[in-house]
Image 1 (cartoon, chains in turn yellow, brown):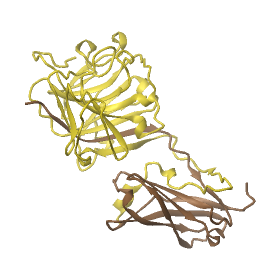
Image 2 (cartoon, one colour; image 1 turned 30 degrees about the vertical axis):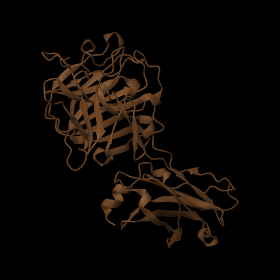
Image 3 (cartoon, one colour; image 1 turned 90 degrees about the horizontal axis):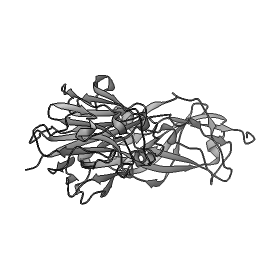
Image 4 (cartoon, helix red, strand yellow; image 1 turned 120 degrees about the vertical axis):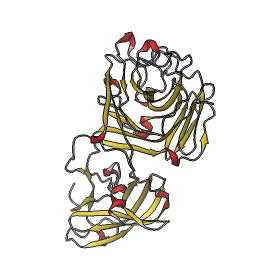
Length: 274
Length: 127
């Protein structure tokens, strides 16, 4: 067996590898030396090209692959999504760039998965980051785009005042565009959005919430996939944004990431410009 | 014709305290039905743990001799495997720290190993 196989096989949760005997004596383990107090842990690394072919039929339709339940976002009237050598999302013409927030209609199309189903101890104050690798971006028009989204999947409209969004659109990466143009920010306009010129971010986007979902801060990175994910030291920071308040009526079990795409009708500057 | 975007891969990291490092304790002389339960979790390699056909525990005893303890496979999903070793008298004659890892054979050939772990064998009168 090669070292490579051995290294790859290291379990994510090392201490779960072996537990003490459980029998009539009710043996208890004792605490040993502690490792580092905290660390980044990869709780799921999903090759979407290996998911069996499947087409989502309706909104909230689900499919489980390797114990990860993926759910459909706005499939049906607003677009199609399915697994065919990758997650393929086709937004229709009115699938605007809108996640749940403050009464805006949620019109992105794609697929999501809830964090707690990947990591049962997920908490709203737990730093989290999502890595996304996409195929080449080939918009048919200036209003086509796709996004990496962290959002409240259960919220009725108005229940939540923030989602975290990055949109790859034309030649720009948009980081929380202005709410008046239909994206994301805190209630009362506390959030600020802006666009950055896409500095060759490659095919990988990483959206990181260093203070967790309720922390109100997000950083977007870009990078290039080469056999494996880029090393953290090679990621390019594309933008950071901060939201000054946070309200939600949902628990940590509601929050999810989304891989979504959209199209805004109208053209003529009607895209998700900040 | 509509715009289509394909997503190839996704990964989620959380920054969390690692689970407490528990060193299981075994009392000297325990025998079946006492068992040592072993959990294997899939790493990032994508090895399908339902393809495990057999496994054993390679154990280094306190005197540095090595024994292979058989494992009975209980349940497996793609990502998790549960197995156990039924203790026999000769397993725990020595007091001290035992170091071990799992070696699992795959139906497609080859084998994989788990992380190296430890447990302690203590006197039957140790609380």
